[in-house]
Length: 449
Image (tube, rainbow, N blue to C red; front, side, top):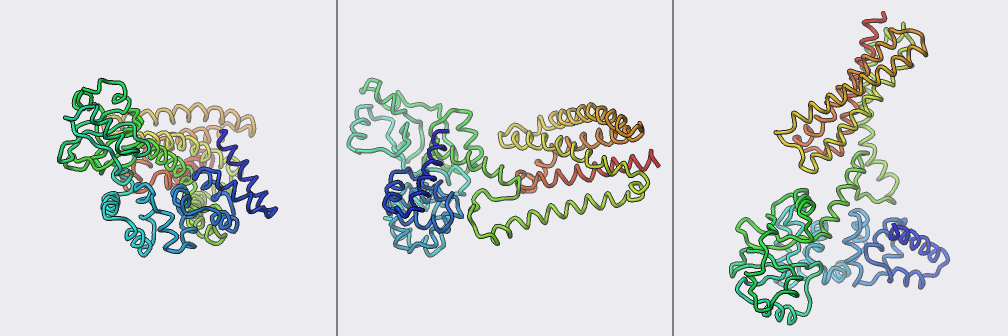
């Protein structure tokens, strides 16, 4: 919380200095900030001010800031850079971060960056880029420290001392044979506390299982969460060590997934620029609004089927929004629970039927309970027990169906390779609206006419 408040304070101070023309003071402030904080500030500024701040950064800091930026903001800044500027900004960057950037660059700029690397780094970058960006191989850093199992702790310590520095986030080194096959890992803390005459084979741990390079990112997150890892080795199909993943990579994935779920529910992209041109933003949102309009017309067509009923019993029009609204809430509760369970890997063939039955019973129980409350309220309001009975029956039906839909929709969308966070809400709303209007007006037509 303090960091967020600190960022807000820096943003206000920076705007004040820019507004007063104190560019030197503003540059000093920007130079004192962490790259991630500079990125958050840039995303919070209009494009004109963003350009001014970007020009205040030196080549040594530009690359680190680019990694932290949302895709669209980053693309906008890169468009204004010359090829040699971009190469200078990316010089010395961690290869896993460089891989993230290069994958989104235009082909001409990608070639320039690749030409600027030495042969070894180019090969290592190609290795990362050969994997899907949402896999363990796409997330990994190929900068690892390896040792042989037959050497002593004393030899390892002297090797580390001669090396001079170790990769950021290193909490352990990995044990491999001459063919680079993974055997195990040794925590740095054990190297510092155990007898230096012991061999690596005697102190290495095999509890930290390596992660295959093709493992999806969501499964990698699960491994870190459930095994309380700070880092993990990555291997290829032949058990050769190809890199490592550290906890900072996992935190980035978790944050991106949270933003994706939040923005996706409204049909938006978490990487959109908040200060993008009005027409561009409107065009993006128009598609989602069009989909919603189509579903609204579908629900309206159901209502139109019962126009005669509404003409004769006008009171139904007053109560009509209640049924789909309650169904929508009940369905959304199931949708969120199931979507979360899918993300955590808690649903499989063995328990799906039990979960389905449970969600249906919850929806039915709540439907019956609240339908009785609504029936009583309707009777006291309009003095007609038949209307109360109709709305009670419709609500019980819709809330039960909504619970089933909330369970089924994300599973069906996932099987169709459609993101449930993006489309689940619209599909569920359509179902609860259609079933709600159909059951309420249909029962009204049967029992009230």
